[in-house]
Length: 312
Ligand code: AHR
Image (cartoon, rainbow, N blue to C red; front, side, top):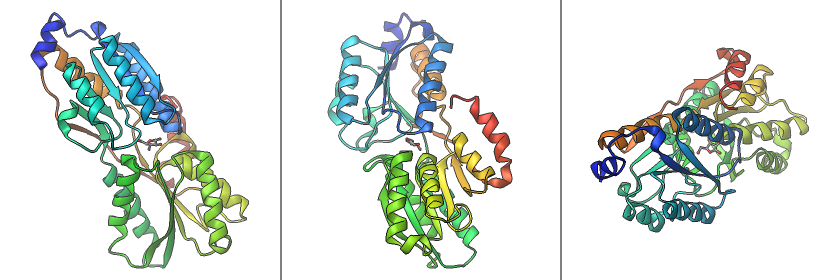
């Protein structure tokens, strides 16, 4: 398949020859918006003609967009799959059309034969890093945790939950007492946190919040403040993404830790795609991005400034 496509391209393998369809989930978070900007910039830089489709959080829209890309005969398809299941038919169609598919930032259930590669973090590890931070921070004290999960059925929601639970499993003093989806959005994060606080007698019983992304954490921080408690102190806050706003919260003492997820998934994706188009080199099935922990010890305002210029 590789050399057939390279030959069909006249063997040039030049990025300028490429038309790539990108089915994006939507814009639920600051991180997602940054990934969209970075992908567009990376494509522009390389002379790739990027066809962008925003699915507004709906898998059916993603499937429609992918079918559209196949009909247009694009050279490759990038997809950030909103949920993990239900991709077999449409990805089989892409495969039959000999169009390589690259998954960005989220995984899918099903055979790895359905796609060429996946550029994503190790999401179980992200949850683990967050959980290990809390185990260390709690230092043997009783700690009741409330959890804001990402979109139900999405790979980061499933894996970040799993990783966190694994990290606290050996520490019976830390318990998850409530866990609900906040859909990866700021508004839902706030709303669900308000519910947690109400259900837990105003929040005195809650020691920490674990949010599957920073946007939900930022929403929850607002809810904690409105409940008369101090986020970052009365309720510790640990989350994932490392978007600029969480560094502001850290600088204000309102957030305690975040695990970085780079929004630049497209760079590595285009690198392997260009190579594949040039000489048929098949990339590894997974290209894993780094999961670095940040805390207020890492000069949050400096990181905030640095991040601001990176597509956020
Ligand atoms: O799939 C990556 C996740 O999706 C990010 O952590 C979250 O912010 C986003 O919306």
